[in-house]
Length: 338
Image (cartoon, rainbow, N blue to C red):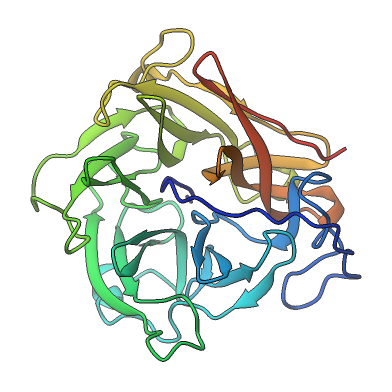
C-alpha cells in the first residue's frame, strides 16, 4: 500500500526544541512525538502509507491509510495532532466497485494543492486482490474551522479487475512545470503505471487510453514522482509491508529525462527490468521504509516516508522526516535516529 509524493510544495520548517509528550494513547501519539527534526527521523505518530505533506494556511497536513482516510496536522512539522477523516460515510460507488472492501479502510492517499482546491487520491481494495479502484476527493480548504471546508467525492479515476495485469492502488499525483498532471500507481502484478490527468477535473485526460509502464519487480509498489535539475525521479518500494519490524520494505530510485520514462538506475539498469538504486533501508530502531515524499524548505530538502516498524513504539508504523541532499544527480537520505 502506497505514499508518497510527489508534489513540489515549498514548506517552512520550524524545528524547535519542543518537549516530547509522555506515553502512547488512543490518538496514536507516542513519546517520540515532539522531538526536534534534527534529533530523530521518526515523528512519533502512528501512520502507514503517508501522503505528501501539504500546507493550508499556517498548518501542515498529512493523510494516511485507515478508516475514512485519517489525518494529522502540525504548525511546525514537529508536534502533530489528529485531524478529522476525509470520509465519515462511505462514497456510494465503493460498494458496487469493490464489494470486498471492509470497514471504510482506504489506502495510501496522496494529495496536491492545485489552483483553488486540494485534490486527494485514495485507493479502495482488499488485501491481495486486484479488484481495486483509485478515487478522487476535493476540498477548497483543509481547515475544518473554515466555512468552506467540505470534501466532495468525484468517484473513480482508475480501476482494475481480476484477470487484468495491474493493480489500481497506491496513487501518486505529480504536477509538472508545464502544467500537465500525472498519476503514478500500481502494486505487484505488472508493476508501476502512469496515467495523464486533466488538471481541470483531476480525472484521466483520455479515458481508456493505455497507461505507460514505468517499473517492474516481483515485489513493487508505492511509487513517487519528483523532478529535480532536469530529471524526473521515480521512487518505488521493494519488499513487503505491514509486518512491523519484520517488514522488508526498502525504497529504490531511477531517473529519466521524460516523465513517461525510461527510468534508469545509477548502474544503468532500466527499472522495467528490475533496476532500482537503493535510497533507504532499515536503520537503527526503524524498519521497512516506504511511501516516499519530498518537502522543500526554500533551498533545503527533506525526505518523508513511513517506517513500517519503530522498535521504540512497539513496532508500530511511524511518519519520518529526514534530511535530503543530492550528490552527482542522485538523492541521499540521512537517518539521524540512533
